[in-house]
Image 1: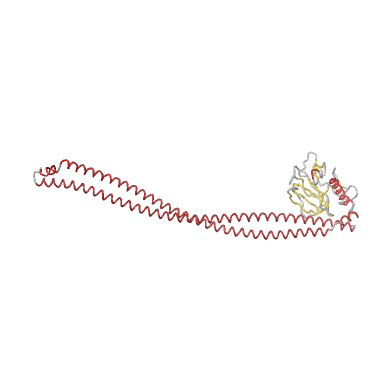
Image 2 (image 1 turned 90 degrees about the horizontal axis):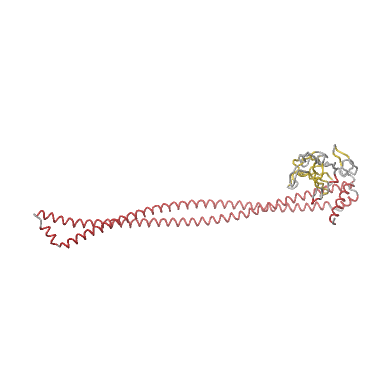
Length: 430
């Protein structure tokens, strides 16, 4: 065993001697070496410092929360603006689509007109070809053939008829060509008009597209501003969460300091009682030096405690100090399961806490006075409340498997003046 191990054993033996010898002159002297009020005041200063830090952090948190709310209002305004801009962009897109439809219709009309012009050009070409053929034939025949046709008339009336016929053919050819040219000119004018309309629609469309793009640019700026506020808001909310964590730690520290103050006050009370010679002794009293008495079937040890687990076939499944264990684990042998067994107060006292802890699970912590406390951990159910006075042997809870536990058992601790000691000397097993 190393030096620290011997020191640990000597410390525990000293504590037991203090309790066993009813706070004799030696223990009084040890207590006298402590300045209880200075320790209490030092803890009070720490609590005040925690409270001051908590107040400052709460004020900062309120300011940050107010800033978060202001940012949210600004974000809401940006969202409203962005929604309005989206509506404007949708309206512009609708107008652009309308212009696209009109331009498509004009293009179709221009295409159809160009096809008509191509058809008329073809007819003119055919008429010109026919006229050229006729002229070629007339040239080949010479003017004599025309005169012969006229002179071959049997009478004047026939002559006029033949002359009219020749004039009519020439006039028809001329009118046909003139008509086709007029139609082509009209169609060309129509195409030009359609081109003008198309150009106008494209200009209007381009103007709307410019407006839409300008709105889109404004929307982009609004979105970037909103996203920047979102990011800032998230950063502030992260700071608020950090402050909440700090406040929680401060609260836990203050609670720990208050518990230490309570233990110091209990130690001071024990010192004052020992100094005044007011500590009682006798059967069943905590720290009594007489042999073994009993409460019902529960034998009271010389240290004044009883086994906290329902009596009968109880054994220690893990001893104090094993792998750093700061208590004893109690179970029952035989066919009956440990789960649900009654847990009884090892001595009379006042319940300090009866609550859930991440490690101890459901646990009861009892103040027996004179700086002595006991803890009963991993309970399935607790049936006492803080501030309640309990008698030695009174059922306070039932065995369970809550918290950091692997299998149903009772984890039992004894505390003397703020330090956990080996509980086994304080109760008897069958």
